[in-house]
Image (cartoon, rainbow, N blue to C red; front, side, top):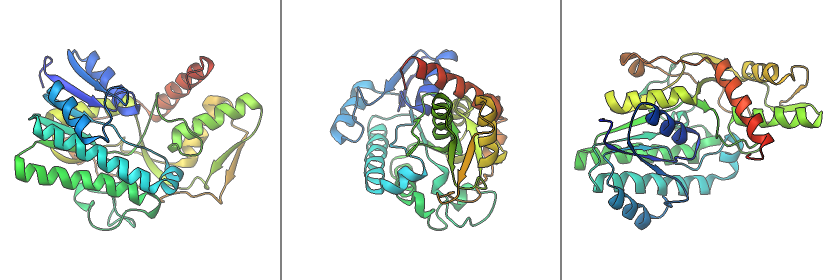
Length: 311
């Protein structure tokens, strides 16, 4: 990409999209088209097509999605499937119709089969079985986008990359204790408990293991992928943490180390998920932020935002 190319970022107000926008600006990109719910309803086919025709982007980072954590995915399966299929279908189709040079999209590690066909998970394993039942509707919607990109490449020659993400976190996430992802949900729980002088109840038993990545590193690797890689690409820090380890770090950062109660009746989700990172290693990518640094920045951002009434 050239710094003068028109670069569209969907989901530009969300966790990943907003951070990609910030990073592109810091790298000197001059023509960034930010797409959020306020200027285009991506579930609307005609509106999306018209927006793309008016904007004529050269490159597209597609980060828009209806996103939940494990409980949100379990309780909103139909809505999650429908909205994500519509958003992804409209964006990929509109990108092809206006002749974008390349589209790089955000997928999810939830697309992988459960039980895992092998560990670490490789990109060629995605369609080897059914995804975990707790996230299957969201996963199938994201799988459909991958299948669509493959079809559009064969039929129209579109260039694409599909980012298979680990657990991402950072500022501007969905800090929702019921439906949010694990890190933002935990940060809100710890903040509320500290404010109210209560204990923090954490779902599961803390044994589930995940690869976590701070969103500023996600923005960096997304640009690397856009410039250097095609097809499905796993991203991650390369280190797998037990949820209990993440909880302990947030408890320490928040000064609430002695106030944690585990609710083993709530779901853990998939027990272990780790990724083969050969592709991003081939372009010399490694994370700049430790998980602890990312958690500290996210905690500080949330506390500041809460005091200002932004969250």
